Image (tube, rainbow, N blue to C red):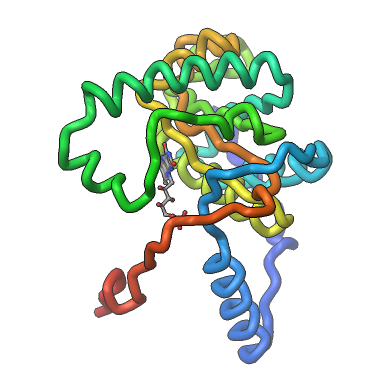
Length: 222
Ligand SMILES: Cc1cc2nc3c(=O)[nH]c(=O)nc-3n(C[C@H](O)[C@H](O)[C@H](O)COP(=O)(O)O)c2cc1C
């Protein structure tokens, strides 16, 4: 094992207390404006914007810095059509047979069903894969630790970055998602994690009237 190499921390910035408070409040306000959108316009998105948001996702912390993620950007109409077909097949099975009543009850306020037109209407889909293992530069295999946690963090950063840039997203999880490996030619060590639908909301888009928990409901302190 070679000795680890360290460099000075040059990227950290400290802010004056009032500036810090302002930044934190502004970040919360912006995050609180994000809503999951299920009605998209077909307006194309700028690939450079998508790429910067993906770069931001790639800055996520990851277990042992193994960065166990892979993102597939799909804008090709025929591939989107095939993804819709695969997702709707699983979703029909889910809504009509597999889903326990309790789960259907939890989904009821969202008004979702097995129809997923947004998978074709939205200009971009980002299929996010978690890699259970990888390969070292010398080609030997390496197990990825905390892959799910790491990819969850990267996905959260991606969703926030897209929202920050002015794009809308839908976090979609057709279950199971194995069809994505086949369609998008991803290897067996990768598990589909999320299918993120990205674009502009339709002009008349509506969202479910649901609420978020208040701080006191989800934070305790010692
Ligand atoms: C892991 C995960 C899976 C989700 N899967 C779906 C899905 O398959 N279909 C869908 O319409 N929304 C899905 N959502 C979106 C949630 O329903 C949505 O985030 C929640 O209702 C809160 O709404 P908001 O994002 O507008 O705050 C998913 C969200 C998460 C975090």
